[in-house]
Length: 578
Image (spheres, rainbow, N blue to C red):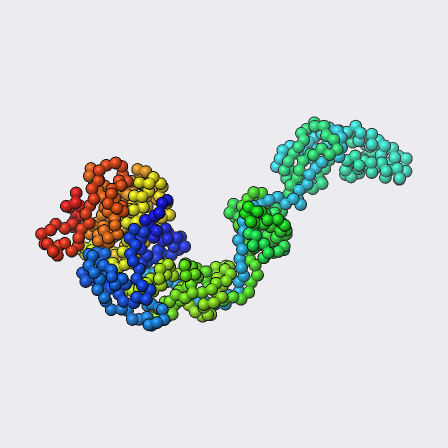
């Protein structure tokens, strides 16, 4: 995708995937406003719309365009301590949860991945020591199970018949030395002890000499058939036992020095839920793959139950030693251009940012080397709402409770109690209209992942503005976004863009039109179909096709105060523009 107009959607999607709502007060790609100085503590409001609060002394109202005037500052934060006070209702709405800094016993955790391999020590290859013809082959195909001592096949060997006659003659003579010599000869030509004992007991020549399995397992390879002529050294079959398997794990080169043979590991097999959950390292290979910079580690695993099969994928976790460490929940750590930092709860609704130096991370906790002390409280949930990768004080100032304004079903959209953070949240939906337009004109599929932040904020906004004109706008917009997740491109996405623009039209023309006009956006309408779209720039780039289109003028909310007879958009926002 080329440079996007909706950076907020991408960053907020990341926060949503982590279980956090989108950062309040962030500005969307096409609607980015200038940030106030981090040292600015004053607040400014619009004389016509006192519910709008900003920290920009040179800013203007996004609803009517008037210059902002100062208002009183919330002085609940202690001057000079870098903290800011957040109203209790805001704390509850954001779902802020704190956790103490504590000394916890944990070590470093190492993740690796590997595959199940056969245990070469449990492999047995059967090779012929006789010369003759195979008769009565009991193993017929790969996969057959063979037990130790089971009959594999019989061999008809004329040479072995002659050797048996010599053995029986020596038994008759009773010369022990000769018996032992002939018995050794029988072994050397491949006759097993079981068959020799039978010959000794019965004194009857065995024409078809049986061959028994010396170990059990599963036939992994069968290389002969019934009636084949074999010689000493001819491979017969290969038996493999799967009662134990190896897992070959690939570990980064820099971590190999931290592990040793005998170390127990935790195992997880996505394709075999009932498989053993533990194994033990029994060998570390001495070479490094020059392409991946990883070394191989062999883990031995009991597989008596037969859950694991060679080639299966394994997720491996190794705990490398444990000791007492000062730590916080890993989710409390924020990282950006300033480095690692946390949000510290100072009590009575006051919060402050604090830089920290981190150590190892394991089991959901991260070691704190410097910056915190045991007993401090850090924000472990909702901290993204307090620190959306902007200046800390600016982010906090946007959380101050705006001037309360009554709103009901008859309240005009321009008079709803919205502040900078609320406008930024609503901008998620207009950003999606820009996103759809770009995807259609540039010919690529939308990423459903980018739609999640707007859908996640819809419920919060509908709750906050219940029983107002904003609710049906949001509901219709959410329906279009959900359908667009499956549409993604082409005519189906065009239909959802049309439906999304129909939903947003009242807000664009009656809610905060000056905001979108000043952001350099233009609202276009097809002359034949009345379909709308939103884009940057004044040259129309029709996402629906080649039909002609005209721009829709942004209404001036102050116009009615200057000329009473001038027509203003009300129930039909397009009046005067078509």
